[in-house]
Length: 258
Length: 290
Image 1 (cartoon, chains in turn cyan, blue):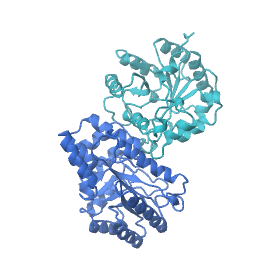
Image 2: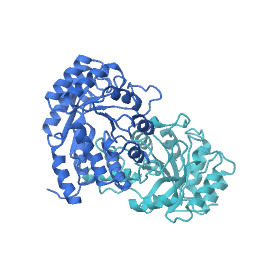
Image 3: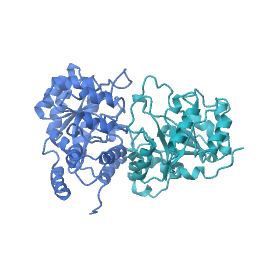
Image 4: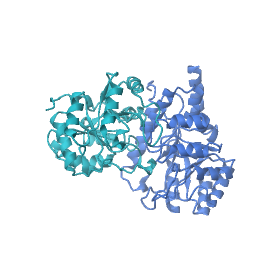
């Protein structure tokens, strides 16, 4: 099982302990995870994604368990070339931050990015939030990703593959039940912000939309890596054998970029 | 009986911040939620849940501004749950300080019904003089006060009259013989502000509960306050409680520090007789891990 939601690098709004790739590798081993998709944490707040992607690939190169999830922003000149280049460099997934880029749910550029990623078999990772709304810096004004964004991208085409991280139950259900069954299968979710007992929201979602719609994501280095495992361990007994999807399997069918 | 070690380890464990629902909470599934707390608590190894009922949870008056009648009904329900679960549940009596006479009467009634602490919501800013008579009664009864706290209030938020660590510190300084449990440092807002705000107020004890699992939070709390000022707790998210227990293990605390956070700080605040199963289990655990 891989962790689909990790980053390296500093966070603009608070000090993070050791957000370095070597530490991440040790954490993955401790948690029994086989690898991780890794983003570069400063990237959402930087305009030009190129330096962030360069830093990401260089930093994780010595670590076989870490696969890059670089940024491609579709309002940047020659983004198609960037997508091709990072795919050739071995990107396991592409990260996009529509809220930080001021892109609405029906932005054609965002749709084009989702379709392009789908064409080459690379999942597009969307992050609903980095921190709880109540603790955000007054300068962190991007806001949470909306359900409308996810619905619009899931409907963009049948090859689109989305991994949505840090969604709460409400957003997740609003998206899932607003899609056709075919569209639902294009979206996977991590459960890092889904509550366990006593409300048992994760158990509810396993029963209603299915465990297979979920992937494992910790949000290291922002959040405790122990949290998703604890949530799985506290599922009611009848759900503990239900298998979530390994995000690794979502990126297996890779077309050569053209 | 199963000999499986609980998910949270075999040593005593007190959840110092728990809640139960009741039939007047406006939820058809209230019993399921209560059962889920006990089920998960048993799986984790929670020895005691120290719990409160927050009025009608918004059904007939606001959660954080409960009417006197909702306060009374909620306390009745909480007392009944504690009576039904004497081996697993202890309780706080909830009061709304805007109704002084009612609040004092509820405290007295709660004490007679077996409550071991006071729960204050966000009905009035923590350093408001209206809280003083409550604190005086708590001092007389030997009740710790669990106070709902927003970590660093930078503005007003709807549905609550929020207080932060500075506000609670002001109240605690006026009542140095009362122990104040600062609710959920992971429960929203800036926990780093809270740690700095209460560092020099020795009768304020943050609990670790809340849905927030920021990396660095536990380390900072330990560095700033030490294990003897911290209480493990879950509040509304028990998976984050289990995750924090496991993270504390990774930090590598001493057996003594872990015992303080798991139950001994709570035992010091609530009294040695509040948690008899902890005392017995703690003695056994100390013997087997020595």
